[in-house]
Amino acid sequence: MRIGLDAVAVFDSPAHSFQPEWLDTRRYRDEWGVTFQTDPASWPLDAPVAAAVEGTRALVIYQGPDPRAPGRTREVEAALEEAKGRIAVVGCIDGPFTRPWFIAGFERFMLLCHDAPEVVQHLVQVCTDFAIITGKRLAQAGADALLIADDLGHKTGPFLSLKHFRRFVLPELRREVSELKGLGVPVLLHSDGDINSYLEDLVDVGIDGLNPLQRTANMDLASVKARYGDRITLIGNIDASRTLPYGTSAQIEQEVIEALRVAAPGGRYVLSTDHSLHGGIPVSNIITMIETTHRFGRYPLSLSERRL
Image (cartoon, rainbow, N blue to C red):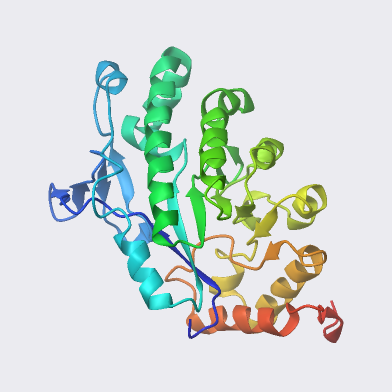
């Protein structure tokens, strides 16, 4: 709040009764049975290093934790108490892709798409059921919006072919968005990576906004704005891996002004980074980004104050 942010994103919480199972000083199993390894370089999320279960038979009958267990909303409730209505609190939940491959392991998940599609469909449905129930609980607890966090791509393209995305992920994402939009809060989607080939489908499922439009993954803000800017809100595109960590104040200002010039006209643009505000970004650069946004991003737009 002190630096002028408008919203904070907060994930759903483990059940009150759950305690991580620490395997050693760095590795632990989460509530889903997935093994993670702590590493400062992996912030804000630890890296999954081992699947929840081994063998296809175990995956066929796999069931996740209870989404109705007490405690799921506690971090969102704590954020709402701290925010006191001064900034928005966005509740974050899983999408249909990332959690299933955590459970199965990335390579095995990809192979299962070809060798045992019924197993993939089972995992995706289990995880989506959990996310829908959890999302409803976060909204009922007071979250101002819901963010489906589901990285669907890497820097040079999507993880799944369009054929497999439409077969396994898209139907469950559509179901998740449809269920959550009935709650009366905006439903946003977060996906890093180059997801240009998915955009038409993602917009069609009814999401209200898309984040973070990763600049370093060929997500061109001008192109996405021209194609979809009247249908969804675009969030992000300020380079968090090059400009913000290493750029000068002038370079940061220029990138912010460029994004505003391209995406702000007509509304439906939220200026933000194209990734997290990680520890490698100097605080002074974050402040420069925010102050530049406040100076030039208020309507009516004052971009004429600066030569572009």
